[in-house]
Amino acid sequence: MIRSVITGSGSALPANCVTNAEMAERVDTSDEWIVERTGIRQRYIAGEGETTSTLATQAARNALENAGVDASEIGLIVLATATPDHTFPATATQVQHALGCGGGVAFDVQAVCSGFLYALATADSMLRTGMATKALVIGAETFSRILDWEDRTTCVLFGDGAGAVVLEARDVEEDGPGILSTKLHADGAHRELLYVDGGPSTTGEVGKLRMKGREVFRHAVVNLADVLREVIGNTGISAEEIDWVVPHQANARILDATARKLNLPAEKVIVTVDKHANTSAASVPLAFDVARRDGRIKQGDLVMFEAMGGGFTWGASLARM
Ligand code: ACO
Image (cartoon, rainbow, N blue to C red; front, side, top):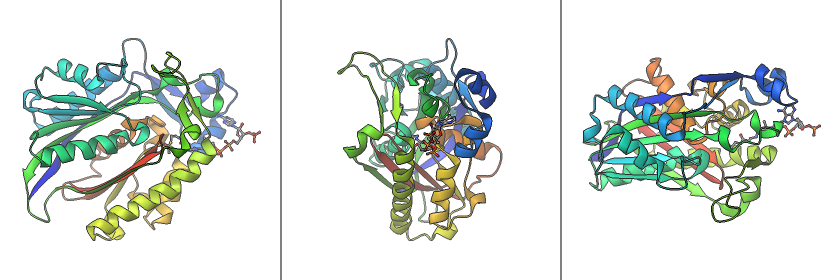
């Protein structure tokens, strides 16, 4: 059977690391408050010359090198972002040009923090229907550029970065590698809980992120537990067989609460929110790359990806490495 197999990963972070202590110099907050409520200790913030496309290109290059794939072999780039370099063209086309692999398919998807799950599902469908044989799936963000740096309730939570995977269509056995099952959802009823108060067709300004954190938290735990159960139910694989969960890194307490609801041991959950903060669509592939490179995620492992974000959008995907 034809499956989409993850054959490489890569990531990129801006040069500038900002600690909680430095955040406390900008707004009325403290390292203690941020660590206790979120688990975040630091975040990376893009400086001059660093944009969503430059971070995405660097992550993509690292992923190609890791997979042993040449840029010229890539026929599809799906890039998830809510902070594109420009309203158009799609950031994916800028990455395609920078990599020197023009001529294939390249476009962005926008599902905020769930963007990588949406991009992975889109690329998986396109590979399995033969529209391409090798793809780059990228999550890249510069949320620092849409933060209200005077709002302590949001500005301490987010960071910038990019992560990428190489996805290849392969003819594999039933118990072989590849994406096994994915479930995506959206519900536009809760826009006011998490949104950006601008846009090209409304204010004409980029706008700033606005969030009612406590309510988002409540929805996140319920929706994530539900979609994880759906994917597990779809595959007939038991929760105990899952080797690793790579969740969207929004808040250590959301990760703990979700794992507890599903009886997944905390040591199976990959956590990078302490180092990267919430990097929206970049957080899942960034965390995945960290855990692959440090040797935790190995060939043959069953890995669950999951995310929830603005929209609301949420989803989960189970893959064998
Ligand atoms: N420093 C110090 N005090 C703060 C800060 C800060 N940075 N931010 C808020 N406070 C204060 C508030 O003003 C409030 O004070 P008050 O009681 O005097 O009014 C108090 O801390 C408690 O505020 P809450 O918002 O109730 O705190 P809570 O425990 O809910 O934590 C948080 C807030 C961290 C935002 C949490 O709700 C959360 O993580 N929510 C999930 C949101 C999220 O991660 N969204 C990302 C996108 S969606 C997703 O990825 C799932």
